[in-house]
Image 1 (tube, rainbow, N blue to C red):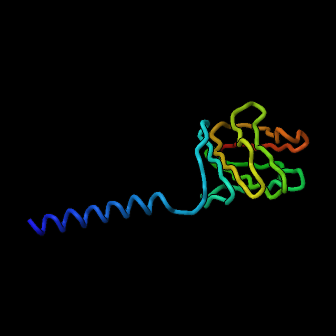
Image 2: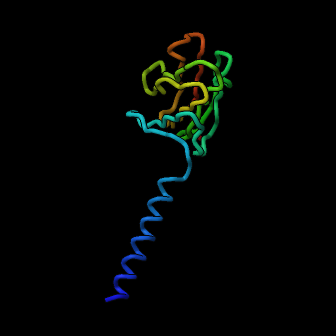
Image 3: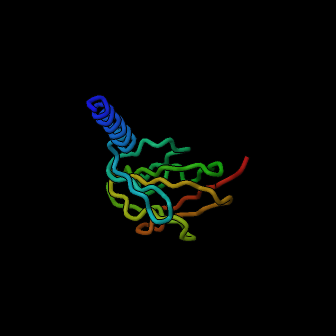
Length: 132
C-alpha cells in the first residue's frame, strides 16, 4: 500500500510539473483575441514570428512585408503613444497597443492585407501573404 501511495504522489508531482512548465514558458502577458490573433502586453512574446514590425515615429517599419501563407507577424510599439494595427477589411485588430506593447497575428488568406492605426490614419502598412 505504501508503494502505491508513493507512486501516486510521484505521478501527481510529475504531471503537475509538466502542466506548470508547459503553461509558463515565458513571463510574457499574452491573450488570444476573438479573431485568433495573439495580443501582447508590455513585453514582447517569445513566439517565433516570421517578421517583426516596429511602430515608431508614427510609422510601421517596414511598412510593407511579405509573409508565406500561415506565417505570423509581430508588431512592437516602440513609440511613446498608443497605436493599433487594424486591418482595413476588419480581418484583424490589435486593439490598443500601449508603448512597449506588442501584437501578433498569423496570415492564412493569400493576398494583400492593408492596415492602419485607427488613431493615426497616416500610419499605414500592407502585408502580402503568398504561397510558395
